[in-house]
Amino acid sequence: MTHSRFSAAVLGIGLVWIGATWSPMASSAEEPPPAVEHLNEDPATTAPYSDAVRVGSTLYLAGNLGLDEKGNLVPGGITAEAEKTMENLKHVVEHNGSSLDRVAACEVMLADIAERDAFNEVYKKYWEPGKFPARHAFGVTGLYLGARVEISCVAVVN
Image 1: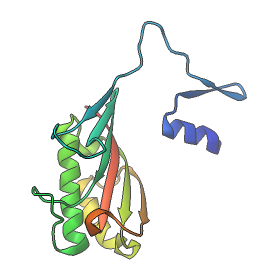
Image 2: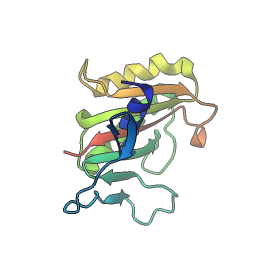
Image 3: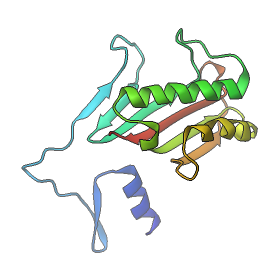
Image 4: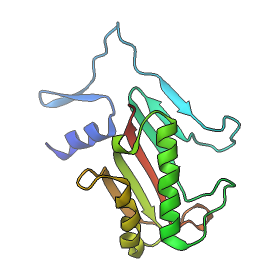
């Protein structure tokens, strides 16, 4: 598989490989494209993003932080934040008809990549060994509210 085929497949941009060129996917007149559902636990939110977006059987989650019920970052550093972030992620996934074992991919942003091992100790408790989602993890120069970690993911709806 060449890089261009892989990228198009991962991004799901509606292209199929036909011979030696890319062509838009043919759509059946009988089957409309899947609806795009913007899902927010709090419909009165003023945030400029959705908690999750469902397209067909795929659920795309916005980044989650280690925030408590009042919207404050939990104290205790990377371990406490990672635990709360994973619990928040689990809640959003389950609230929208899926589960952590249906998560296909995660994107992990760390304020300090040196905290990766501490983060991984928490992260790996949420999945069965050998059945982890695909993942990218990278260090960033800053996260909202001074957070240590932010995670977004893509899941399949049950």
